[in-house]
Length: 69
Image (cartoon, rainbow, N blue to C red):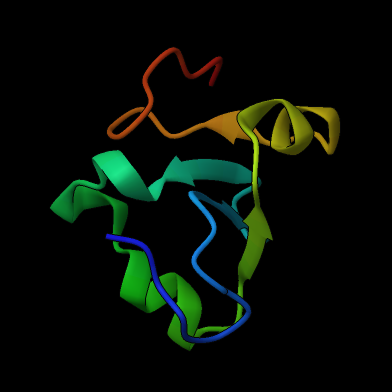
């Protein structure tokens, strides 16, 4: 579910600046703990997965898959 809280303005992808992983909010899982990431102010919005990857973010194993960790 896309958010309009924290740094998010309805973007599809949320980067977790603490763990350097990116989440797909259109495919969110409970394990992603998106609300906790936003509350801790570790949220960085992205409009594309490629932009998050270019900034060094790895895929979330739960909502995107293909994590390299």
